[in-house]
Image (tube, rainbow, N blue to C red; front, top):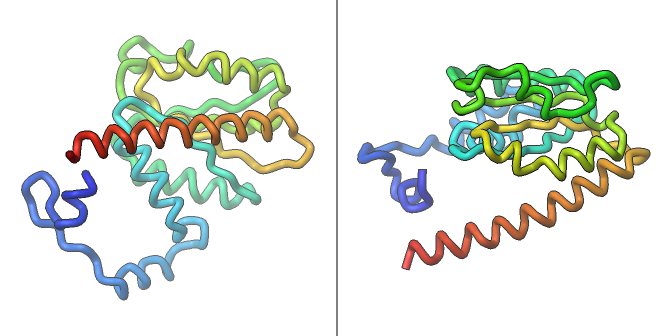
Length: 182
């Protein structure tokens, strides 16, 4: 949905009525705190509509919250295929999830949850950074449910560099949207 169609209430030629603030408040009150947040909704929209794939770091403090968010995303994102990979010392590189997929699965939109990545060594974080073009070649939404940890300098450095890159790409995307809007 574009900003213009959202603002006018139009989507694909159909009028879409916006829910009232009261209705939205009622729904949010019925949800667990992690699912009622705006950033959860933004993540769900990103994963549903990013045609070329995307990376998302979903920060959580408690495993129960991570499980709630992942379960809710799996339901919301149906019928997209969902894959999971969990960091382990014997399987440290997230690109190994691709080895388990057929060529058709690699080429179709999918969501991939990459768990426990914050336990990875600095070399694994570097490999993730160095292999970003490999991941970008597939239309997969990569979700890294990550627990912030002060003792993980590699993850903090990677997340900081990723955040700077994302701001740069957001500026490019906004410039392109501005150019198209003229």
